[in-house]
Length: 219
Image (cartoon, rainbow, N blue to C red):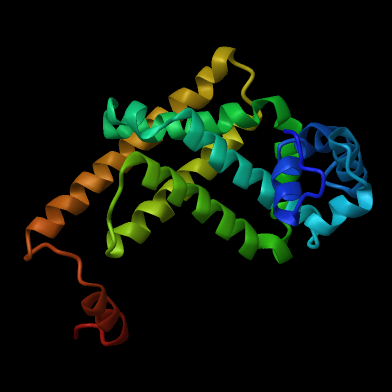
């Protein structure tokens, strides 16, 4: 990416997000990695640091944002529209992993940082953001409670797929793809069950009634 002569912080952040992972694989998500990425883009390290006031976590956040954008570019709506819904989700998840594949060690180091208890809230937000991006690209328009359950379910599936992918040495990540197919099949069955419950008022899950029973159990 070619930067303008006097780039804004957002422009620097976007450009660096695509370059830092190659250096983070060797130097970790550190100022050394950021400095090498800045040098690659013709930026002064001091300039680059301004783009990531939160340090390593901000760098990881920006990289994940770059993955979101690249995923949308590689899988435009017209291409996804030709797929079954479950195939859209699988394609979106695998595209994310394929984008990370050249930087698998950087991804491993990023997950280790996000697993730190003080970073767990940020990790949860990033997982939610990825799931939301995937559902939206897949064509989901839910705005009710279903909107949230879909994203919680997919963020969990995506997190598990990453753990399998990190150690997957099979050809074309066949083990990860097989794992993902099984999990997405489960998600689709769950969505079908929820749809049936919504159509049948007698079987519909009532959150308030459930919480009430927890507080005042039947005698």
